[in-house]
Amino acid sequence: MKYMLLIYGNEANWESIPREEFADIVRRTDALNQELLASGELVGAYGVADQLNAKVVRVADGTTAVTDGPFAEAKEYLGSFTIVDCESLDRALEIAAANPAAAYVGVEVRPIMHEADLEM
Amino acid sequence: MTTGIPADEWRQVRGLVPEVLGALVRRYGHFDACEDAVQEALLAAAVQWPVAGHPASAKAWLRTVASRRLANRLRSDGARRRREEADAARTPVAPLDPTPAGDDTLTLLFLCCHPALSAPAQAALTLRAVAGLSTAEIARAYLVPEATMAQRISRAKQRIRATGASFHLPPDAERSDRLRVVLQVLYLLFNEGYTATAGSDLVRPDLTAEAVRLARDLLRLVPDDGEVAGLLALLLLTDARRPARTDADGALVPLAEQDRSRWDAEAIAEGTALVTGSLATKPVGPYQLQAAIAAVHDEAATADDTDWPQILALYGLLERVAPGPMVTLNRAVAEAMVHGPGAGLDLLATITVDDRVSGAHRVDSVRAHLLEMAGDVPAAHAAYVLASRRTTSLPERRHLLARAARIAEAEEAALAEPAEPAEPADPADPPARDAGLRA
Image 1 (cartoon, rainbow over the protein chains, first blue to last red):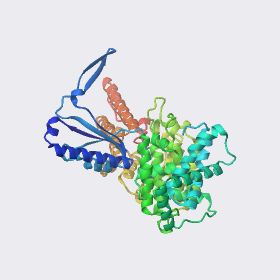
Image 2 (image 1 turned 90 degrees about the vertical axis):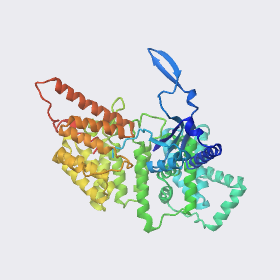
Image 3 (image 1 turned 60 degrees about the horizontal axis):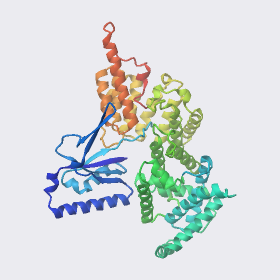
Image 4 (image 1 turned 120 degrees about the vertical axis):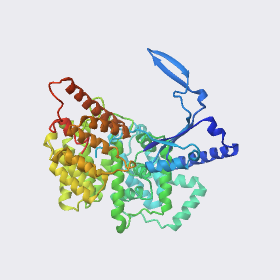
């Protein structure tokens, strides 16, 4: 099963963390990703650029309009996401708990839809 | 693998993998390195044969090339070679005895489905070392990057090495438990491949076909185990419906609405004979019972001809042999078909399913179906929508939403005609006969 692990936050969240502590978060996140890569569970891990860079594209009557994003007014924004392919939901939750961000803002775990459909 | 070799022929070549790999491992030890060498030989065959022509004996060619690759591999890495030699000195390697190839396949299956591995690792390694698929093909089947799959396989082999497992059949005392793991791996392989789009997607290897093929091999090697026959029967009887289970748009067609003339009669006959034979002579087990239930469905000329009392009795047995909420859930459907939706809903009310159990959303979809049978349209609608939100399967979500829309439309049509008050759904109506999507 594939799961998407999402980490949301805002500048206030992250700026409140002392620089060295933040560097440690980054180090531990890298180490976790290396571990997931080695175990054959990592599909991809990405940080997204600051929301200042977000664009929203809408097409109406064949005309494309691009506005500055993000899409939804929110207090917290998507900061990074990881996709894992692992044995079970429990394993995905374990991976989420191992993410340093779990101790700060929490990690959202979302199953990714699949095409399989058991008839048995 | 994209090769210039016809698919049928390539399947036969892949079928030689266990024998070639088994011979190598028995001679040189080092399952890990031998497995890589055999994969390299396959790759070489795919590249060379279309150009240079096919060898007289594919097996001999693969064995020679794989041995050469293995020798190069061990020579080219001095540190590794010393380590391997040290290992080899510690673990006596069985001499190259004339063990029949079949035993190698079985030994490999046990090794790849080692209980120390996670389920995804067992599946991946089985597909490579027993079915002979390449890492790239396995990665495509599971829709993950090739690097991810390569790591998964390599980690699985490391773990097997770490357990100290040797290339021998498990001791008799462990045999039965280990065989259950192998059956579970094949069952999951089949399910993974049983998608709404299977067959139309030429890029993804057909995992259902691989699972059936491996189950056939396994039955040949372990003919006395009723559950092996049961699993193969279950896979055949389920796969037989594949041509009818999706419509032209790729949408799921529930069992009760399938065009049964499109079912694979040959597969049904084979599956039914297998399960009938094993139930008559072997101790009963969960795969045999599930196969028997599938056979009862498949035997019915129309959905209305389904022998629900027999299915209900079989689910009762299954619940005794392998109790669990998903079995009770299926029994609730059969209960409703035999004794009415009220009886099914009563049984359903006794089930509590942790939402971490795969298929937990099916409680909602069965409830929706039984409520629809009972004529409670608003509650059925709400349950269909809830089930559609809970499922992680895309085809199933579409199906559940279509059901919700269908009963809402029927209700509206009935309300728009004041002369005829809305009536409870007729249980004989085909949609209501849909056994909660699948029974």
